[in-house]
Each structure stands twice: as C-alpha cells, then as structure tokens.
Image (tube, rainbow, N blue to C red; front, side):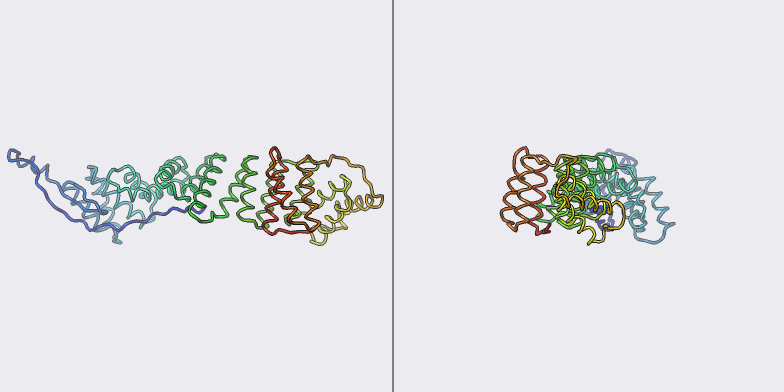
Length: 391
C-alpha cells in the first residue's frame, strides 16, 4: 500500500536563553533561584524551562544534526533525565523527532509524536503532520487501532483531503471491516472528485476486490458499475463482469445475456467461458449463435477444436444445426426488462446504435428492473465508451 501522507519536519530554531527573575523582595535567595526560568525559542514558539532543563536541552540541540552518536546519546539521556516540565518535554520531543528521523528510528519518532500530539503547545498547523506520521508508523507496525485513532482525528481536521480517507480504508480493511473500508474508499473518491481531480484507478479496483472477497453483493455491483464508468479498460471490464457474475450467480436467460455482454466488451479470457456460453445457447435453441461463439474462441486460440470438451460441444452444436431444432434443458426466457435488453441487442446487431442506446437507457432506469437493469447499465456504458463488437 502506498500511504499518501508524509511528514514535513521543520528545521529546529536556534536556541536562545533569557533569564528572568521572578519573585518579590521578601523571597529568600533560594526561593528566588527556584523561580528563575529561561525562555527557549524552538519551532517558532517560546517556551519556559528551568535553567537545568535549558542547559540539557541546549546541549542536545547543538548535537541534533551532528554525527557524534555517543555524545548525542549522552545528551539525550541527560535531557530525558531533567526534562520534567510540560514545556521542556515538548522541546525534548521536537529534538527526538528530528533525531529519530535522521536515524530512521520509528520507535523514537513514535514516542516523540505521542508527546507532540497530546501537547497543548503544538501549533495547529503542525498537528496534522504529526497525526499523519504517527498513524503511518502505527500502521506499518501492525498497530491498526492506533493508526485508526490518529487518522480518524486527522480526517476531522482535514476533511477535504481524500488521501486521509483512503488510508483509513486500509486500516478498516486490516481490521476486517469490509463495509467500512468500501465506504471510506467511496468517500475518498467523492472527495477527490470534489477537488476537480480524478480518483486513482486503484481505489475503484480495491472497492471491487473487497466486495468480492467479502461476498458483498450490493456494494460489489456498485463497485463494478463505478469501475467501468471511470476506467473502462478491457481488464477492468473483465474484472467488473466476472465479479458481478460471481456475486449474483445468474441462471437461465440472465446468465446467457450476461455472457453476451461479457463477450461484447471483449472480456472473455478463458476457454471455459466460450464453452459455457456455447452450451447454454445450444440448450436454449440457438445453435447458430453457439457456433459463432465457438468459432470466435477457436480464432482467438482459446479453444482447440480437436480437444475435449470443445470437440464434443462442437459436435452437439453441429447436430442441432443439422436438424434445426433442439430440446431445451433449461429455461431461457427473460423477464420483461430482459426482453427489453434483447431488443436493444437486436437493434445493435442491426446497426441501429442510437435506438439501442435509447432502449438500454430505458431498461436501466426502469423501476424494479433488478439484475437486468444492471445489464442495461453495462450495455449503455459500453456503447457510450465506444466498445463495439459484432456477433
């Protein structure tokens, strides 16, 4: 997975120190010393630390970019030992974040980010970057709950960033929440479109894949529709229709018509698909179309006329054509919308494309059309995209 969020680490500002006495004239010298504070400028903010914290943090700050690992480790240990105040812990976390980045030490970065995310001193413009980085580290280590928590908060802060929703979808998928993952991918797609940009093809394909693996029929049909609409490549047409067939398990006339559609968009890729379609057509009393299907499979090199079971299917079709009749072994009668679909196919074969489009459009929007409305949608999409194939 290519996570889209990264973190831009800001250069740490030079540390300066200003000693400010605090207290009235009645205070003892010891009390006055305890109340002395230092103002430290780091990351564009001024924070108050004790002189002891200032000394340790200043030394660490001077070693952040150095290659002196031993000295850096000693300075880190000392800063961690003395940094007890809220401001000092914030400054230390900024240094640890930069050191962890330079060392490629995600454990150190995660610890620092936890402090920065929780700190009230973190500037609002930097919080999204911290949340993104912490979520990414958590995801990469398999801590999906933590990743989800940080990216969900990030989504609230940056609702116009589609990549956040796409990343959250990967978390939901890892947590076995297929519906949640699909919904988030859809939100990412809609958000990207709202920015006037095309959503990545991978988001559409992943929606379809998730629905297939989880056997989610309605989300799978929706994913198949949106995939071929957005990216109508031959590979995507095949993926969409194969998953559609797997999820809906069509029978009888509906299966035949789905196979006709699949063949029309050049999505047959296996010998079994040609063989199945030819057998169904032959059993339904349409041996001439069955022969055309077999001839195409042979021409494409997917069928071998001399090998079983293609050899036997060819013989069955030839017998049916010789007597010009066949006893159907299964129903091949479409419903009302199915009849409309077949009318559209006839119009298309006759070269009346505009009429076919109108017929398919009417079938696609017909209330209660069921699966045949899906087929009408796919037929219409294939025509508007210039997908053509003669039977």
